[in-house]
View 1: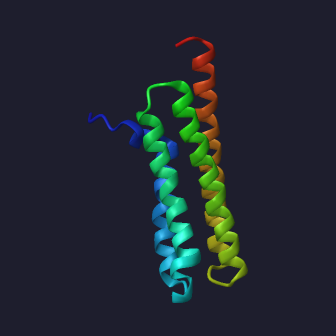
View 2: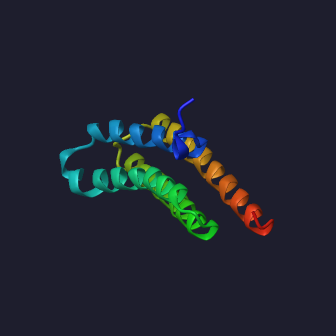
View 3: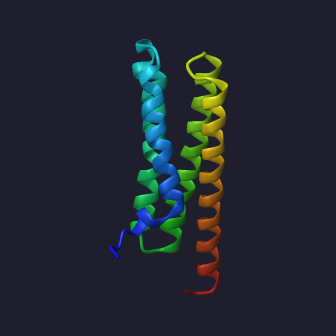
Length: 125
C-alpha cells in the first residue's frame, strides 16, 4: 500500500470533494462575480485542503493544530459564501443543502482531529 499521508485523512477527502464541487458550481455564476464571489469561494475551498496538507506536514502538535483550526475557519467561510450564492439566486436550495451537509461533515472531522491532537499532547506522545 502506498503511503499517502494527509490524503488518507477523511477530513482531507471530504474537503477535496467540497473543493471540486465548489469549482464546478461556480462555473454557472454570472461573469460579474468572477473577481468577487467566485474567486472567494474557490480560494476558501482550496485553503481548506491546503491547510490540512500543510498542518499534516508540521511536526509539532501546536503547529498542526493551528493549521487544522484555520482549515475549520475556511470551511465556515465556504458555507457563508454558499449562503450568499443562494441569496443571490446563483445556486438552488438543494445545492446549498448538499454543501451544508458536506461542510458540517468536514467541520466534525476537523474537530475530531483537533481533539485527537490535544489528547496526544496531553499524553506526552
